[in-house]
Amino acid sequence: NKAEHLASLVLNECTLSHPYFYGASHMTDDISENMLTPTSKKRNYKTIYTWKNEIELDDYGAQIGTNVAWGNLYRSIAILNDVLISCEDIHDDEKELAFVKGEAYFLRALAYFDLVNLYGLPYDPEKAKEQLGVAIRLDHGVEQFYSRNSLEECYNLIERDLSIGKTELEKSGLEKSLWHPSVNACNLLMSRVKLFRQEWQAAADYADSVTSKVGMTKLLDSMKFVDQSNSEIIYSFVYDRRVLSIENMENTGFVVSENLLSCYDQDNDIRFRSFFVMRGDSRQKYYYPRKFESYFTSLGGFNMRVAEAWLNKAEACVRLGDINGARLAVKRVVDHRYRHPANVVIPFDDEELLQFIFDERRREFCFESHFRWYDLRRMGEEYRPEIKHVFTYVNDDEVREGQESYRLLKNDPNYVLPIPLQERENNPLIINNDRLEKLPE
Image (tube, rainbow, N blue to C red; front, top):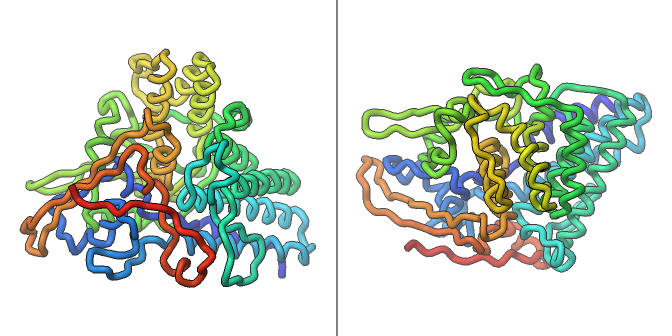
């Protein structure tokens, strides 16, 4: 019944515990299997890793909990809806109340952005009014039957929430820790939304509003980069990083792919040594991401930082035909991520430059939230790679029993997740996404 109560609720349930699809990286070209790991340890990730039609059903038809992002994100949205409704009856601290409202609107926008980019098709301006997004819920009631809104309606809601959130945060006049969103966070997320909507000038303008206020930091080989003292960090979330840890990846049998490692200039790119560590024994050594270790972050597992604003600006400029503007924008990232920036060749050709920007996004944000998966979804087919994953069957005595390979095509319908089985069983009005059954090659 106080503003501070709502502030604590939002922080604990929707930022520190922000839901995400933990298997997003397993669907990309950033992860490979450890062929020595017994199948029993990596079985629960196989349906995601091989893009199976029903990712909740394993090889034996047993249901596994791999499609929980839908329910977890709607749980977060329900809490945020309840907070916004409760704000109408609380008047004890107007500044704190305005901040809580701004935070709740921002987090609801982020939750719907994740939902629509996991369970909806990539945004197409010419088709968005007809294509299905997700179900929009703005109250805290329980309804058994409801249908999905259009992609256009979902993106309009996201933008509206971000605009209101920004206004409320400005009205509050408060500045809090990096565990809380800010006006800069609202502008950065809006730049991302505009980029995904292919509204290039707006994406560039919102990126400018961030870069004009927030500077970049030179990455060093050994530094706690995600920290309250680093002015480049704009917002940090996901407090419990154990599921993202090196130990968890080792235990479940997945490693950094050679495809991703080859994307780096391993001598010149500072990120290579900062982002990855080699582990293993005499039989096999693999690289693992260490962005989620205390070595790299004292805050959350995922974060928003100004590097994204520069890369959003760079891509938008290419799309607008401003090659010089694009090169200057991406150079800001290069200058702060390479030992010898002058040795990095930034292309002049528009197609080569756009590919370079996509590669920089991959190098910069690997394993963070859903970055690579979302970028793969929205790339044109001329930039989107075909992905091949190999799955090796190994018994508990570490004896290899067989191997299968699967492929995600450039125009694959499995770039959108299925609606969860329970949701379809409970609600006959919900329409599932069309996906293919993947057979081993």
